[in-house]
Image (tube, rainbow, N blue to C red):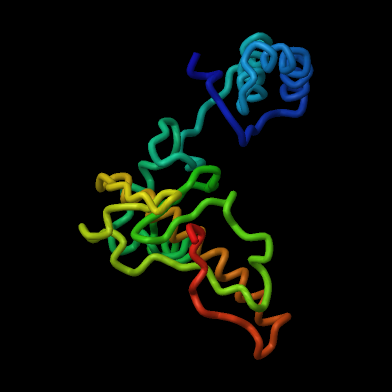
Amino acid sequence: QLHYQVGPPYIAEVSDMYTIVKRWSELVSKVHAAKPQLLAEMYAYQLAASDVQLPHEVVNTMMVSGVDAYGEGWALIDKIPDEDVCDSWIKQKGKGHVLPTFLHFCQSYGIQDVFFSKYMIPQDIFSCSKPLMLEPTANVMAKESAYKLNTGRRRENLEAKFQKRHAFVTCAMTSAINEASLFFKKHHCGGDANIKQGLDLLN
């Protein structure tokens, strides 16, 4: 059973993937009809792989997404020293920290007063007038930082483990988007670029 409870990314021989996908295409509409959920296509893939008897070797450290999810690489994040959790991925790897390969940011995340959800990013994020995103302050693992804000600015207190995980993703995403935004502004905006950090996704 454990060899079939899998999700993307998938790595397989072409011939094996063809065999799975052929059966998957036969099952996916039926699975969706029985269980019309977002992940129906993934459930159908698991059933197809099982049906054609092509078990998978599961790698649990490759990806992180939901901070309370099992079968993801959060153990790697939990091992990062508190003082390094908000560093960029490049800097963390330079310090020898082993990180997951993928960050699947399909949830909402937050630490302190900084909230991140890809679904709430404004369409004009890369523009000359738009401010940069707010980023967490350096003391993300301090006791007074053990909370996140949700929509409506509802405060949610965080256990230490989830504090670190939310801090990691929030820092990673806001800093990466700001880096890309600064690149855009540098090459397209001249002296009119707004480079202040002021974009709050909850406002």
